[in-house]
Image 1 (cartoon, rainbow, N blue to C red):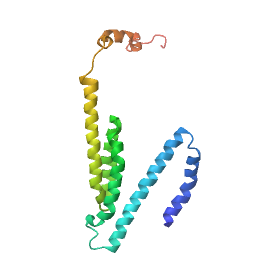
Image 2 (cartoon, rainbow, N blue to C red; image 1 turned 30 degrees about the vertical axis):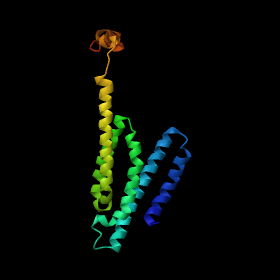
Image 3 (cartoon, rainbow, N blue to C red; image 1 turned 90 degrees about the vertical axis):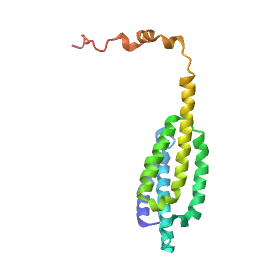
Image 4 (tube, one colour; image 1 turned 135 degrees about the vertical axis):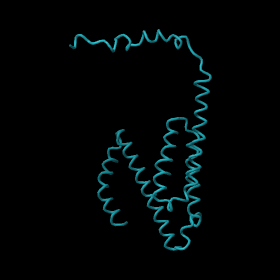
Length: 184
């Protein structure tokens, strides 16, 4: 391990051990999960950079051509896509799908790829495919929601009794514009 990695490891190890020890409590499960995600994200970034640097060291005149790394990157990208796609096409939550689009567009493609374009260039087509799948699923779920919840909506009598709903509402029993005389 590099010296700065060892130093960071020694500083973080007791904290991570404490989080793991407390992981039986709900709030620590989420923290531990976030630690796992950040660790993997950082390691992946480091591995990608190191692989690109190593390739550049051995093949300096052809390292700019990202297709040279295709035999290494393509199987990893295929594995990533094959792992994520089944989960994505079964997602039903519209908010979750929207968040995935934001994360991919802003954090992954926008930030990581723009900062390290040469290291991550080979994964860009896979990320674009994943993003297209999420968009397709989001469109399908939105159409399904519109069809089920809006187009085929059958109103009930109580839905149409709007004045009655207002009269029953607890907020309408007290006039918010009136001044409470007992407080003065």
